[in-house]
Structures are given as C-alpha cells and as structure tokens.
Length: 317
Image (tube, rainbow, N blue to C red; front, side, top):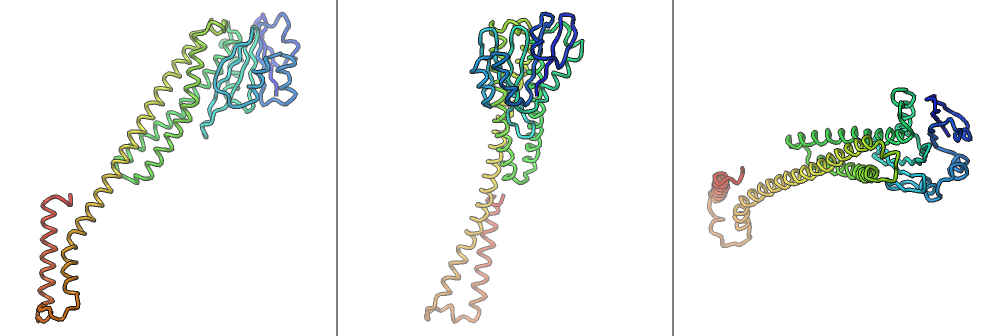
C-alpha cells in the first residue's frame, strides 16, 4: 500500500494525491509511505524517485544494521523497531531528500501509524518540515523500547524475592538465563540505534536534521538511558546467577555432609556386624548366651555416642 501526505505553502495538509503532483511548486514538503508494498510499488523507488540502487537493495534485504548512508542530496536511514512479544527487531527504512521523506517497511508499523496520526494535528506540524517526521518515527521507536525493559526489571525483582525465599533454585536459574537472553536481544537493537543517533547529531551532512538537533539529541539521551538500564540489568542477572549457584553449592555441601556423617556412624557398626557374620567355628563369642544382646548394645552405644560427639562438634548445623 502506498500512502501520500503533503503540505502546501499555505499550510494545507493534502492526502492521497497522485505522485506526479508532489513536484508542484506549491508543495512545501511531502511524505510517501510504502506500507507492505507490492512489487509494482517497490519499482517506484527506482523509476520515480531514482534512489541509489544500493539503498534500494538494502530495503529488500532485512535485517540491516541501523545506519545512515549519504547519496548526493538524499540520505538513507535504517532504524529498528521491536516486537514486544518476541523481542525481534523490525526494520524501517526511510529516505530524506530536499523536499520530502519516503518511508519503507515490509510489515505494519505502529510507530509509522502514530506519526501519521500526529501530523494531522495542526499544532504539532506547525512550523515543521519533513525532517520532523524522521524525529517522530525514531522517537516513537525508542519510546517503545522502555516498556519491554521495565517488564524485564519487574521480572528480575520478582526473581530476587523468590531467591530469598529459597524456592526452586534450578527453575530460578533457568529464568535468569532466559532474561539474560532477552537482554542480549535488546542490546543488539538498542546499542546500534544509539550509535546511529550519535552519528546523526554529530554529522554536518544532514542539514535539515541539524537544524532540529535538539529533538534528536533528546532521542540520543533516551538511548543512553536504555543502554545503562540494559547493562545494569545484565549485571543484576549475573549477580543472581552467582547467588543461585552459591545456594545450590551450599545445599549440595549440606547434603554431602549429612550423608558423610551417616556413613561415618555406620562404618564401625558395619565392621562389627561383618566380623560376627564370618563363618569361623572357633569364635568364643558365638557361644555366649547373651552375646547377641551384648553386641547389639555395644553397637547402639557406639552409634549414639558418635552421633552426640558429631552433634557437639557442629557437624549437623
């Protein structure tokens, strides 16, 4: 689907006008959105707009790393959105020229829809040009990163509380590794976007964006906050992982200590039972009338005595 929005010199907003009208002298700026385009619509990138073949090729090969390329009077941007459910990156490409912006995406984009809707407000578009559209899209993309990261932080706080209650450590450890995997996917999206915004606000090539540098600097600040949050959460997952490993090791040590004490107590008792279980004929004790009860009594005293001794030494603590 191809959507067109244009602003006239008289501040009149036009929509769904023919492509050939975009070059009229009364058009101040325009926005053409390629939303899930057909093959015929994709051909317009070359036949009508005459964009660079490398930029068009990048549009068709997802996923490119977030970047900006400069081609004569046109600047090509690749930015990434985020699917909240899967944390997969979604690519949005746009071309910024002297008089307009062209956006291209192969799947529906809520960020594009939000920017399209906001531009219908006269107060928002007043005194703005097509470069402001790039800001609206990037700003919404970055804002949509935050809810996912806040959700991960809530999960980490919950895991930390469960770890204090000493619930199923194995299950908690698996959840920590899942969260670390989610943070890694977020990191692969946020960090390249941060580098892209740094290039934008420190470049002199995109003149229209430089005139609105404060807006893009605000996005860059948000991305810095996101990177700090991601790194902080990754450190927290590492601490939780180490804590759970320590709890598991302590629990295993306690189990091994208990088994060792039990084995130690039964070692002399097993020895005595083994001695009197041998089938030698000349064993004087075998002829005792009370021999069985004496041996059982010795074994009981020996077992209880060793238990009391180990208890006093703190082996059962």
